[in-house]
Image (cartoon, protein in one colour):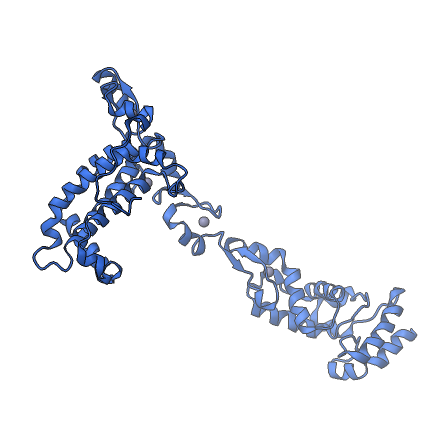
Length: 418
Ligand SMILES: [Zn+2]
Ligand SMILES: [Zn+2]
Ligand SMILES: [Zn+2]
Ligand SMILES: [Zn+2]
């Protein structure tokens, strides 16, 4: 409907169809009306006026050697204001008439309504050239409009205050749900004066340092919840307080609670740990980290056997293994101790001689204690296993583990015989 005759005078609107509330607002009623509106919305709509006017001026003069956008701006601005005021007065009535029609789904948000009217006006100003050529789709047009809007902004051609004053009037016309403006009316100027400082639409400035946002009092909480300059506690719950707009960077860089990979990631610990808790993780997970390292050395061994080995290693180490910080040092330490302990006793719950564990030097003299019934079973299993897999399990009295491997089966049998 709008596209067909955008420049024609809009239908005057049947007075009978105008909703009671709007009629009352327009036709007098109490003389003292609060005229405060949602500050942010007024500002946003006023911001859309310059590009709208620039579009009208550029499209009106393109291809015209005698006129430039600047030469028509003042006239077109006047037309635009008149057009918007007139259309906004009847817009709601028209929408009600058309309710259920093709435009029934159109947004009834005041911003959308006014932007729609601005577009309508701008397209009504297109000259013949801009209509018939490919002008409307050209990039040059976009650039010219942007440039001209910027030029008007810089020149102060249409001040924000004046634009906002017009928007306030428009807003009252199109905000038929009374969501963005105060509709309170008073019998005297005094009553109105008393109301204004407490009106929920009064203008407020954000108090957060660095923020120059303006908004209506009833939007204070909402702004506070999104203000980029508000100082808030760290989202990852470290003890820091950070400006909201710095939060993301903080969280992925210096935040002590930032999740990092365990230093033992490369050997198999896939835990993600807050970077401040690495030490804690390292000491509470020493066993599992050692297990990972041992798994790398004895790929065939069962977890149970490896767990036992971890305990043996810990006892055998003169230095506290928990103090070893980096993966390379711990790995080489574990390898070293593991080699000194000799080949692994897979499956057998053999106890290392207490004495022997105290000094590395005595480690070679490990003995199998066969007091356990399970040993027989285990030994049998070992023999079977040793046929299929690389042998790990020997109890050598020999230093040389290669030698030990060769004699493994023999030893197993001995052990079995015992
Ligand atoms: Zn008010
Ligand atoms: Zn703010
Ligand atoms: Zn933090
Ligand atoms: Zn770990």
